Length: 210
Picture 1 (cartoon, rainbow, N blue to C red):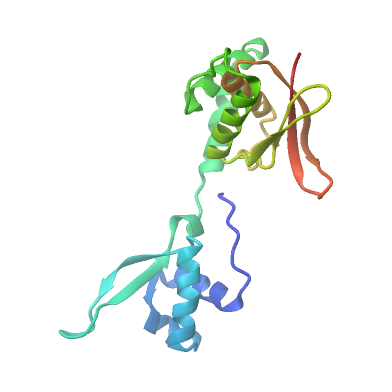
Picture 2 (picture 1 turned 180 degrees about the vertical axis):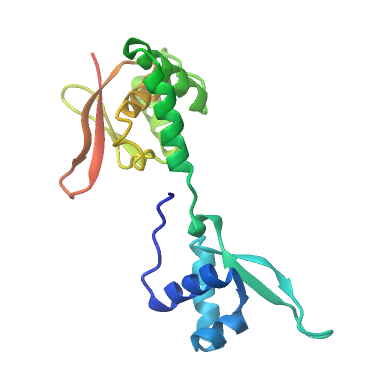
């Protein structure tokens, strides 16, 4: 399932639990059920809306006059999904059916499909290609940056977008490699996979080959 970071505030967690059980509710109904003042309910709902965990599903009028009440419900983010389970099953079914020698070529084709841009122009300076590659990777949620190094530039990935399924499909690292090589028009080598950096955060590290 999709991983969602739930709010630590107890009242907000109660709101989410109530909406999960009742499907939807107005702020008035939430206030009465949870014994929270209208001002506090509005505050917590505004934070949950900003975090993308709650959305307005509709409007309800209690009478002919007055402003309608917003009906709140859980967002798709908060509800979660089974996309990672389905993706893992489909990927495993397909990759496992391929001879091992054909898997790298398949992952290169997959990288071409998901890449939002054409390959970089080899005539442009490598630093420009690195900056463009980082921008593309960050559009794809890698939280990447590049650093100069004595042996050549290195790309650091601060997040694995496939973390939910990478343990079952380590070949996805080849997808990352193919994606970078396509954008850089230059070969790369993986040096680290989800290793802890000096701040204790997991990173993946790729170096340009010369």
